[in-house]
Amino acid sequence: MTIALFAALNEIKDTLPGPLTITAWPGGECNRLFQIKSPSQQVALRLNHPEVPSLGVDRRREINILLNLSNEPWSPKLIAACPRWQLCHWAQGDAAPSGDDADLEFLTLALKQVHHHRPQGEPLNVAIQIQHLLTHAKPLPAHIHTFLLDQCRDYRFVKQPVLCHHDWHPGNLRVKGPEWTLLDWEFAAAGDPAMDLAGLCLGFELCEPQAQTLAENLGISAPRLREAQCLMSALAMVWYRANPRLARATSTSAEQWYENWSRVS
Image (cartoon, rainbow, N blue to C red; front, top):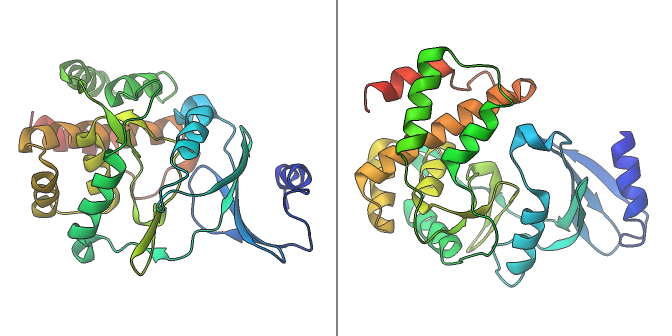
């Protein structure tokens, strides 16, 4: 076990009286997750990645959002948190199906329930977030950098932002019968629902007809969805360039992203 884990366990020892069974949980690209079983409860301990600037996260904003969502059945139930770790009740269930097996009716409902909220605090503008991450990332080729900045400058943030999770993928959506829990809210903020949809389409590997169905269900036009897909895929590409140690073999390269979207624009 790591020093960070020992330190966190020492800080939560009064919350979780032993004996404890601790299991390192697979998954999670930038944080480490542990399942902890005590005689009275089962919890999730997340050790936060320390490089906050390159991740583009706001730990305080995440905590405030979870506290405000405490009455929602689909929100993780926060027990305790600090900038270094977060402790929540364990969410039961399996990862939501993706790709051709994705349940579009369920995903529509989940998006609508999250977007129903209008949180206070600083909103997250994806175009600005991309420009922030570029300052921490490996420099892009000049023509791609210019093209990306043009896309960011052309984007207009919504006048009425809603609660957006910004990191929808099967591993963050646990389903057990009619119940579901949306995990890992560290990128959540008031934002553009089209961006949240685009992120979901990316994370769930949805095809274009599936994406269009969800957009129609949410009242999002095809041009808005395309713009959001361009920027959300750019956000993912730049994020991995700012965090190369976390990059996956399947991560989209800058050249691939430019090839895909320079034809569309």
